Length: 626
Image 1 (cartoon, one colour):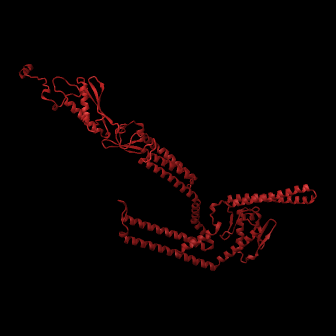
Image 2 (cartoon, one colour):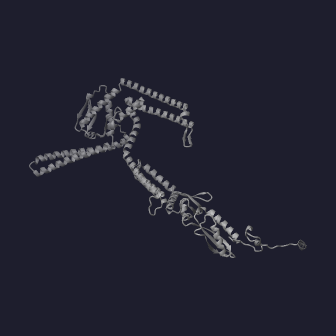
Image 3 (cartoon, helix red, strand yellow):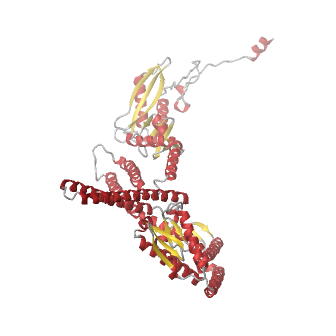
């Protein structure tokens, strides 16, 4: 626990360091890029400085000319305007240069001067042939040389103004020359910046010497040893706690662990649940041990001055991502609130349409030309379109929406959906069209192509039909659209469905005898309506018989098989009772005295034909054979 506390304190100390702790990755990190950018700025500053010098010389000339022409009022006014113009141009150039430097400081961190692994200040400008990087390295070496001087005294550091710079000198040796451009980057004067550098160098050398004396090193070594012992102790405590937890788990497994069940399904039995918990405890133990070791390393490296850089890097591996995550979440909060508001608005709209759907389905709300069975599919369409529009609206506010990878994945998924769902989309569109065509409803007896049965399910992709043999047939909606559909139930309740049967009777039977028989057979059939009454029509006059069609109304289209069977039975009975032969479809009778094609139960003795009797004499048969 002490290790964790020390790590947190050390992290807070680094966080409090301000901009120096901001990771270099958010700045331009390449030395060559920084050198180029800073050298361009230095070149621009030098050009501006030369221009200022020229303008200064010109101002002096104008001032002298103004004194010489003090009695020429017109010339004096011209000279004064020219002087004011030069002053305004100089002020404008200085302001522009100030803005340019402020803009560069947001993306350029400069080159640090850190002779003792602790950044004292940054170098942004070049001097002479020294680039900013070379200049920073040279200043580091000079400060390290000062530290090697046993007789170093901070009072010997001197600030000496020169023609163009203010120099920090130690015993005649130049440490750093502060130019106007350096002061511009620091937003101060050259003298104030030189004094700041002097204080920083003195403090850094004195601090480093205090931290590297033998007494401090011994104390730091003892503190490091204490940290190591604490880490070992924490690891042992974690191991003991986990072993105790595992033993307690084994001891009380029957009481605490009884398996995991989801309703009637046993996801894990008690043994599997116990093994899972033990594995999770082992993983947790190793995670805590590794975390303790990792957090203790920055503390150990932070104890000694020459390893504090490693400590900062190790902490940076954890803190920098955390900073980025926190910053990203904080910056994303406005977009998150926008998304929440949009989602609430769109969900409220969907709730309103759902309310309208329920009202239409219950019949409370009636819209002319809009059927109640359209309510659910229409709401589904509105919901899909609303959600799609909501995604389009909130897409720019989603994190990573402008990422090329995110866009590439979106395009790829769109291509897969387009090519992989072409058939499904055709069925979907066909399902929508069928919904508004109202060709059939759930429970209707229909015939779709060669499929005959009752509609039991209608979705956006398929239509399911139950045949009279209890076969479930799934018909794709695109097939339904491309096939003709016969609906037997659409008008059956109001107008009735006409059941018809064809029968052929020979020309020797008058049609006036056939009509009553067929009508009687239909009237006695189950589920046939008396009103309207059954009727008969002659369909065709064939070569050997007349084709009659009996028609009857029923309001039970789902019982067609039973109705037809009963109707055929009654037709056979009626015609047999009337002693009339059914010549359907082709029946040939040889009239040689054989009995007519009527069941014998319907014939009396006088109706039975005697037939042709042949008697063969055996003697005559023998003589003939001889």
